[in-house]
Amino acid sequence: MRRVLNALFAWRHAVSAPLAGLLGGVIAPAVVHAADLPEDSADAMIHVYDGGGVRAIGPALLVRKKLLDKVSLSATYYIDSVSNASIDVVTTASPYKENRSEYGFSADYAVRDSTMTLALTSSKEPDYTADNMSIDVSQEVFGGMSTVSLGYTRGSDKVGKKGIGFFDTATHWKYRLGLTQILTPTWIASANFEALSDDGYLGSPYRVARVFGATVPERNPRTRTGRAMKFRVIGDLGSRNAVRAEYRYYWDTWAIKAHTVEFGYSRYFGDAWLADVSLRYNTQKRAVFYSDNATTETLYVSRNRQLGTYNTIGLGGKLSYSMGKVQGKFDVKLNGSYERVRFKYSDFTDVRTGKAYSFDADLMQLFVSATF
Amino acid sequence: MNKLRVFSNGALIAAVAAVALLSGCAVEPWVKPYERERLADPMMKFSRNALADKHRDHVFEVREGARGATGVQGGGCGCN
Image (cartoon, rainbow over all chains, first blue to last red; front, side, top):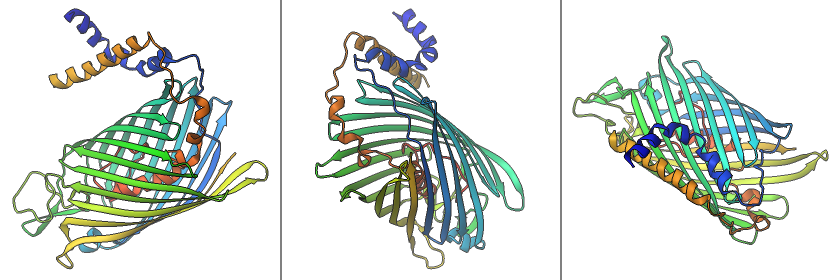
């Protein structure tokens, strides 16, 4: 028995790779179902974030086209024009403006019940470049009732500082596992699990920490491993409306623990209008080396408020208008969304007032999407 | 390290065994294809628009310590 197990362990790498394909092929009933490629589409969007002294605005474009009914190619272009006068910036430096641009390319390949996606993105800003490669495989099983998906992303960053140039690197690995399950004719659920690993320079060369009231450059670990689990469910309530709920739990080796809950409600009005409202709540416990004002000398110390103890609550609405068939070929939709989010920190003080810091942020999107 | 190895190998054994056992029976889908019409509606999708979700997830990922499992592959950035 031990010899059999040892042999199996030795072959585990060979077995695990085609396992997803095996699952579908072996269980497939008589119904033959082909996986659907995404529809051809073109999207143009203006996105706005304004909160806490930071304003990031920009356009985003996406074009997707099928080739020979087997492959769907897409290209994206995304710009963040950032004007940064955040609390970190105004208390330790001076406000600045910069642009970040991101290009993306992906190819989806469908064969029988499986879809394989290869995606490449490249993000560039004056002091940071990030290149990502992702592979995702999804397989429909149980006669299309379930979809199992596996994904892998590798990211390679170059970290720089204004006036110095690029001085360090960071590498990221992400492993994803997902299951989408049809529960009833009106309810569908999904479970997603992701393991994220980072290595290299994981902080900011501009940010400072406080130790005994004095500012020092922050010192972050050079590795971080996190896990996230997300459960989602959507249900059709019957009168052209639907409700959804999501929960995500995140934990990592920096001792950060976060719970995120979201509820949403969608409703059709007439033939052309679809409205959504959503409520999002996120609560986080701080990283072990995070401190607003450290009173001991530790190997790692950071005053990055994103690693502190805080909660965020957001309320948002979306509206979508279907223009129907334009020029007989394009199905055009006009969409707008607005979300107001409050960030409330428990252990990060605003040094200008001495009180715990909090701010409100606005997120807006205006976009046109055409499918053809 | 040994515990991790055992766990990952055990999970793999369980998956292979499940595949082998299930090969003996075809699971009947309890929601027939003709009953899935309402699930095809855009409001029943987990992600209606990739570009919009990408922006929203990016905003939260940059400003919160938690990340991942959102369904968006994501890119990196030095946003801080």
